[in-house]
Image 1 (cartoon, rainbow, N blue to C red):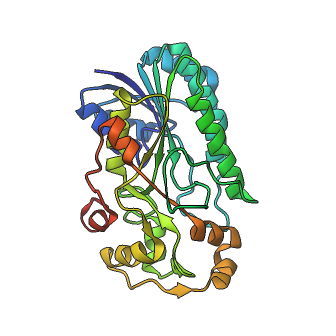
Image 2: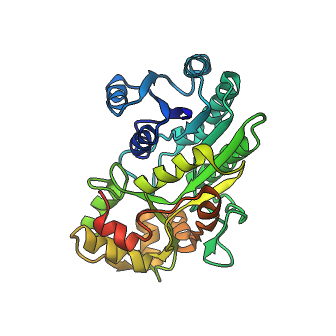
Length: 311
């Protein structure tokens, strides 16, 4: 049994992660800012604490009371509806910089030994091969909001892996699908696909790596006890080009096939930086996570997951 403090226990990954940690026999304290979400955390079998990651004093008091062996950082503040022209990343970037700094300080003060943090696997440098391992550098930050997001991720990961006195692990999750995600039922990307507002852009050769939130949670449970102070890609087994996976996803949710639009038109509609990122996106390899965490995704491919996994 491990005492776990889960920051972000009410989010898309936090909910299945809480359930899986409790099922594995761990003692869990879930953090949220809202009482109604705290009620759901307690209903899942965990303790709950109301706290804001930017209130360092309250955060240190909460972790001191919980006395965790491991602290899990799953905090984001992404908008309910994703708009590529206005991605609204400012609060999430602040959580990755300031929130991470506060959480690491509180974890160290509370005597935690392990710190596991969420990151993303789709920010690799768009050069060379189409599937990247963890040694590949992150992309050079582009202009605008996406560039600041890349810088925030780099800062966040460096804080975690370099945290003195803690075993710091970074889990670079793939594109989430499943309940509570953009690709889940009622999510903004699902809505866009249903309305044929998510086209295959240009040649559609940007490579995506997906992961169902239940599988992401399973890898995180494994990281509570295994793995070194390193970075792991947490993705399924089949990176795929946009032109390959998007029609399958549309069919799985009962939508019409996606339209195809040229790069220039997509640039007018979604912004040139978004189109450039989608076209240059690289997939990720999960070989290291399988080998060192002893983890396997239940939904080994999005082909199966889109059709059969909980939405």
